[in-house]
Structure formats: C-alpha cells, structure tokens
Length: 442
Image (cartoon, rainbow, N blue to C red; front, side):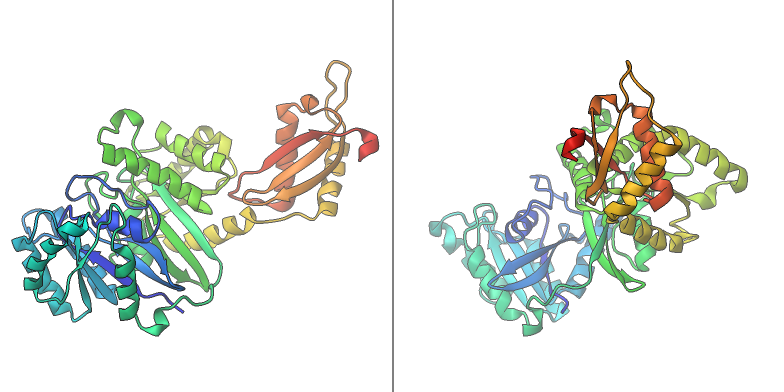
C-alpha cells in the first residue's frame, strides 16, 4: 500500500533540512546556515513504531514575487502541500514569531490539511516557555523540538502517526525498483528530462546552471516496472566549486550514482562533451553501475545525420573505457525519442544483474582458448583451468589460472569481448579477476 506524505514547510532557515535528516535518520538534505539552500522538494522515508511515511523537505517559503527562482521555490512548496496528508509547519523558537509566519499560517489554513505547528531550536526545557507566542497562529498547540539534538522528535513522530490514517502504515514491499541517477554537467537538461518523463512539474527548471543542488528521488511506474529517478546537481570541475553548498552537491551527485543501478549521463548536444563528463562516466564505471550516455538537445542540431556519426566517433574516443555504454540521441524539451529511454534502461538493468551458468561460461572459455591461445611470456604459457561468476551488479567473474601475472591486458580485453559477444552485457561494466591455482587443485 502506498505510503502517506508528510510535508515540512516554513520560512527560510528555520531548520527544515535538519529536521528532515533527523526524522529520516539520514543526511540526504544539505544543511547550511544560509537561507534558501533547499530549493526543490526532497523525499525520504521515516519509520516510527512499525509505521512508515514519506517525508518531504521543501524550500523556504516567501511571498517575494520579483525573483523568478523564489516564485518557483514557492510553487514547489505549494505542490508539496497539495500532495501531503499532514503538514509540519516549522517555526524558529529562537527568533520568535515572524510576520512571514502568519502569512504562511494563512496559506496552510486554506489547504484544509492537518497542520502541526512545530517550534524548532528549543534546545533546553527552560526554553519551552518561548513557544507560547506561537499559539496566536491559531493552528492548535505547538510542539517544541530541537532538530539538531533530537529533543522532542519522538513526541512529534507520535503525533504524526496519530494523524495518519491506518492505510498509511507500511505495506508489503512492491515490485523491484530500477534506480536511475541522472547526472551531467550544469544545464545539460537533467531537470527538464525528468519533468518531461513525468509529464508534470517535479523539479525546478531554470536556464541558470546549477539550479538543482540536492539529489532528488522520484518514484513512478512505467510499463509495469517501478523506476526511481534521481535528479542530481550538475557537477562542475573542482576549480569552479567555490561554495561549500555546491561542494556538498557534488558529493550528493556522486553518492547518487552509488545508490543507483543505472547512471544516465547527459551530454549537451550544443556544448559537446568535456573532461568532467568522462570523469562522471569513469565514476559510474568504477562504482560498477550500468551506464547510458544520452545526448540531449538533439532538436537544436542541424544536419543530424552527419552530426550523429561525428558524435558517435567522438564518444568512442572520449569514453573508450566505457565502450559498452549505449548512446541515445533525444530532446528532453520536445520529448523526441525520450520514450526509447526506458526500454534501454530496463535492458541495462537486466544485464547488470545477469548471471551466466558455470557450464556455459566454461564452454565459452574453452572456445576462446582454442580460437586464440594466450601468448607465452618468457617461455611460460598462461593456463586457464576454470571460471565462475561470483556476483552481479556488476557481473564479476573469477578465472582460476596457473599464474595471474601471465595475464596480459590485451588477453583480458579479449576475454571480456568474448563474454559480451556471447552474453550481451549492454551498458554494464564487467569485472574479470584472475586467481592462482595449481592444476591438481582444480
């Protein structure tokens, strides 16, 4: 059964992300003493007394209309309010009641949803009297907490569970989820792609590079399969990472790859590929994740037939270490060819978890040895006695040999190519390990 949604809203810098991280027992949201750090809705799962619910962190609410980005932040918070079953209205107990708090209270009252006023930064019992002024908001009894220290969060979770309907309790696990991290340099079109896929406004789309700072998870169903899209901050070169917040965002993007099954690397068809794109692909390869290279903004390219060949040649040279990665040209803005992404993601996910029966694997090894025996080195010949697959994600094979030092990199590559020819493995790196065994031990 689908989990209920609980949204955290409030003006900037009242501690929403700190409370989000406390209640989800994670450090998913960026915490920084700078107003406006959280811009999009950020989702996490909170568990309490055998119940679970989806917690949503939102950007700081203001009613500023001159700044387009602040207007979008407000729109994102309003969408979270619409989705939520319960709303946590977070307030700052140190600063006291603010005129903006009253405006937000009026907005929340009009939503018709249950609203819990939560006064944060109450670090000591002696400070609990400071919450009395918040009764004037007319939203009922305020709860006092310290998100930073965990004080009062148990009572808060109890109150949330009381307001959630019984069907909000944790249900049985659903179908396997395919997790896809959408990565790339700033302004490659990551947020636009996710909005196009979902057919609705989900993450902020802005022509300003670096708009998305957190890694944002969005679950949805497509063709009977459950996917989770992870939209990540655009990754800049280290020399351009100046703010601490942006540094954390780079870490979140790299960790998003680790959390994913498949990394979708977006390249900008107008800008071409850069060293940073290669680093991202290399990180996915090193992490053992599936990899797809998507060339976005293809609608802006003239002479596409010739350009496609040039792009494929360029990718072949720049991403030679990940030659297994399929390439797809599309336009997130127009939606052209975007529908081809999900069959490809599904295929890569399947190959990432593929297992080869030991008998078939050893038949292939015998045939490979017969077709191309390994060259001798200093009068010594490599012998491969036996091979087995020991794990998947990524597929990992162990070859038992007489001497691992006799395995030349070219022969390792030959064996990998034979594996791919026989068993596909589109979009997934392979791990080939060689271990020493005496012939009589095999």
